[in-house]
View 1: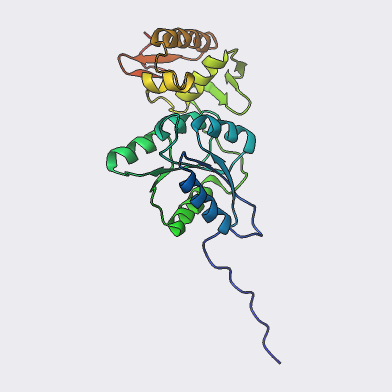
View 2: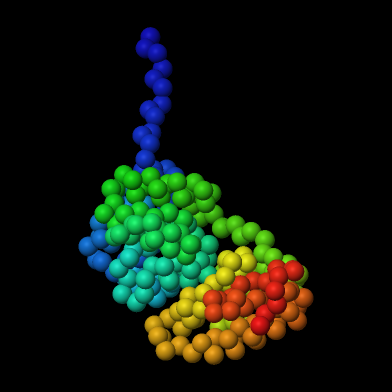
Amino acid sequence: MRPASRPEARPPGPFHAAEARVRVLVADGDPGRVGEIVHVLGEAGMEAVTAYRGASALARVADEAPDLVIVGDRLGDGPAVELIPRILGRVRLPILALSGHPDDHTVVALLDAGADDVVNAAFRPAELLARLRALLRRAGGPNQPPASGPLPDGLVVDAGRREASVREQRLVLTPTEFELLVLIALRRGDVVDHRTLLRAVWPGRPDADADLLRTHLTHLNAKLIGAGHPGLRNVRSTGYALRVTGAESFR
């Protein structure tokens, strides 16, 4: 009698058809590169959603509910370092950034902007897939709701529902105030510079008014304080951050 055969082990690497299908948003302005990435993802059993501009990427994040995002460095309407925090302002997703010149300065800037990993744009398919798998493992697998850690002093921000509250007291915010709060809250007390705030709220407007930005932030700060939160702090000539109890006041 022949011994019972053992189940064949699945090779490591690509996602398998029996597993949940992983959806990846590929945002890059180079059609050739996008096509190459889409081919690699398809061979690995993943589904690709594409965007060639930052504005399109933001719409795809909302409409397509991807599990992961790949952001390239050739978007036509702004650099990746500005798009990444705008994506994270809407939903917390693992983000892999591609860089044609991954020197220390560029890598640090992309990681500080919110990217989880940075890969050379001249990527090797096997390495790209391995890094995506690693990001997915850390995120808890496909189609899992992203966890959001606690924010200082009872602040809760739900980017998906576009709601914010302080100790269960709902904040009534304008769309611009909410966008600003999401961007600042993601830094959990770290400073967001003026340029990032301006570009996030008014993308594609190099003439955006810094005084108007301050007006919106002043109104946002008043609403936070009115709900019992310490509010915002202004780091002079640098930017704004969430104020935590005991930190310097908004000026």
